[in-house]
Length: 244
Image (cartoon, rainbow, N blue to C red):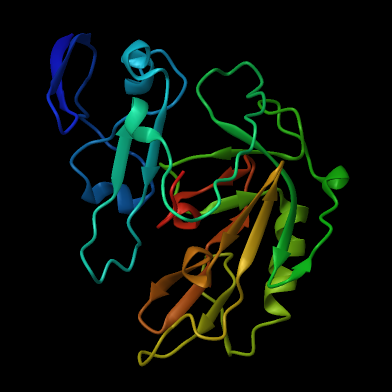
């Protein structure tokens, strides 16, 4: 364990006995994470930084991720304790955390519906497989370490069909990748004409612009950053440029 120092803008806060480690091998398939020098654990597990300093920050933190297309070289923010309070003119929404099935390390939300543009899809979660971990077909983990958003297979199918029905662009079929992709060219705004989407959580509506729904697969090709997966996850592309 070590002593860690945090600058809160007014003075330096000292924390003794902080446990941290070094990575000797990285098998994470997310290549975006290969560009960073380290990871900070913010989960609910005992080795999480949030848990280790929890008593001094009242177990509160907030963050804002910089956009993937960071043309202005803006930086993200991570705030603890009283500094984590929201400010600004936008209305602050709250949604309760759901059970993580006893795992103890995940933050889990309840997803009630999804809209593409202004049309609610009336997602039928009854047919979605529940996971042994979460136990509820509407449960979805909100995670900073996962880029894409993953939904149950039949839920993802409903979303992908609704998105495809409102896009008037030529499809691109990437080899060995089950993604919904389109040709957008190399000139102008690649997100022009692409739909917004809203994730309707319990008591809160998270509205996402096209840049939070689609990602550049390669030059001139853009893909929906949502696909089916065994574990429902609300990923960091969806969360970019949002205060959470």
